[in-house]
Length: 163
Image (cartoon, rainbow, N blue to C red; front, side, top):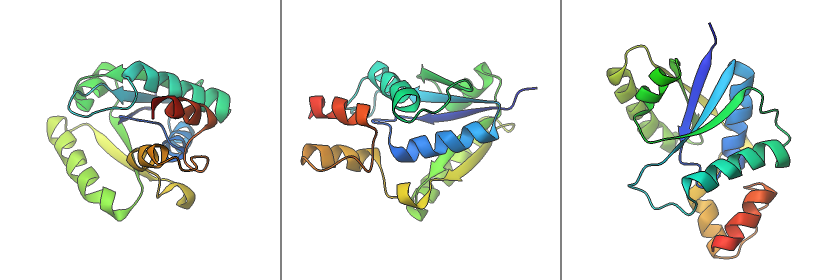
């Protein structure tokens, strides 16, 4: 049986922190599904399709990550429903700092209540990537700051078109 993990998020935009978790996840699982949320309750800088394009382009072209074990999809359901659809019992989540843990712990508990077979696995980003958040990247872009340490070249190009 394949060990399939779901890595859900908004990825608006994908950062080096996300890519770090993806690279680690690919080494741990037979298949990693990067699931881009279409949630309507957040204002996104990029559309779902743009975020999918940026993820694929960042991984394959900018970072030269082998994408053989990676599938990038969009979703608008509960993550536990997505797990059932793809026959996965693993949700992968990235942690940057202690401040992330409380929310992630609560989310993992809710997912476990929704489906007791689901396990949430937390991976830490490397120290260099722990301070990066999509929200702060967008703020730096708006204020015309240097983005090279936070996102790939293709994301920089696209974010500059938006702000």
